[in-house]
Length: 187
Image 1 (cartoon, rainbow, N blue to C red):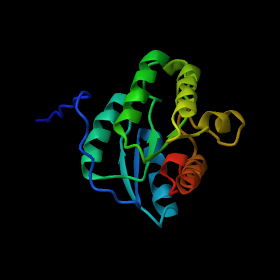
Image 2: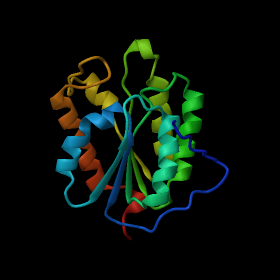
Image 3: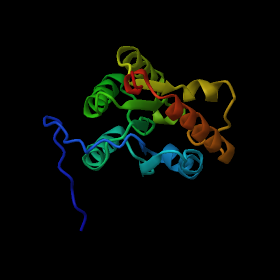
Image 4: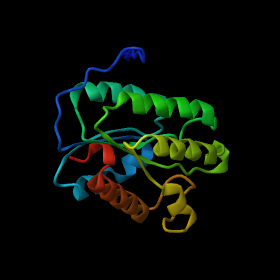
C-alpha cells in the first residue's frame, strides 16, 4: 500500500535549524544523471539529493516541503520543469510557490529547461525563470538551454545529455553553488 503526503501551501513550512554547509539538490532525471558526478565534485559541503526520474514541479514541491522540515540548506539546486506541461502561466505559479517556500537567506540555483518538441515548447517556461531571477536576488539560473543550443553539450534524446554532458552539468552546478547568491552571502 502506498502512502500519501498531504501538502498545504497555505501554511508556512517549519524550517529546520540552519546548517550553513548544507546543499539540497531537488530534481528530475537530469538531477539523477548528475548525482554521482556532483557528489564527487562538492566535497566541502554536505550534499543531500532528493531526486527522481519523471518528477514534475508539483512532485518536487511536495518533496521540498518535506525536505525543509529536515534540512536548512544554504543552497537549493532545482532541476524541475522538464516534465511539466507547456503552460508558462501555470509554471510561473509553481516557480513562485517554490521561491516562497524556501527561506529568505537561501540561494536557489535553477537550471533552465531543454526538451524535445514532443513534450511541448519550453521557451516560455525559461522566460518565466528569467523573469523570476530578475525579481528575486536569491534565484540564480544556470542557462542550460543556451549551453545546449550552442553545442557545448551533446544530447542523447533531446532531454538527457551524454555521460560527458552530465559531468559538465554537474561541473556548472558546482560552480554555481560555490559562487552562491547575493541573498546568501555574508555581509
